[in-house]
Image (cartoon, rainbow, N blue to C red):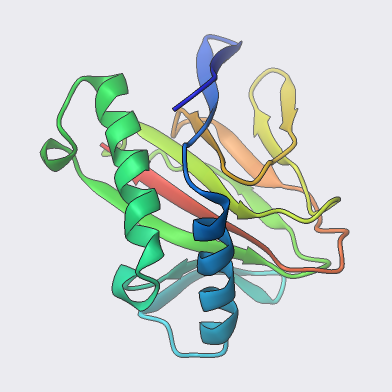
Length: 174
């Protein structure tokens, strides 16, 4: 982990950091996803604007996912001072084709402590993460970066104006 920046938005915090993951791991995850994208996934949910926003995948289908997920869990464990096997962790992929958005929502189901996103493939102009409270914060995504935030914060992703698919990992821990 290198630079960790914590910000405040109306008594809520969000944190941006870069995971120390080799670029070739993200490239491999992206390439493997592209090969699988027309497959039947374990589960898909949140069908809005003609697409499923959440794609649940068995991490064994893309073995490199395990390395990234372990780093995410270790970072969260340090933050909440618990070993990764002591808290619940769930993840999904968010694949945004050109023209797609992610609808405004939150993850406040009373069983999460932290929500977040890790960026695998981010073409230029492929949408910004927006966190909403009394004010709106826009975060420009970067490959290899992670944003953690309160599950109670409403958020969405603006339109993917690129010509490529954008791929990220969404997750909750608690």
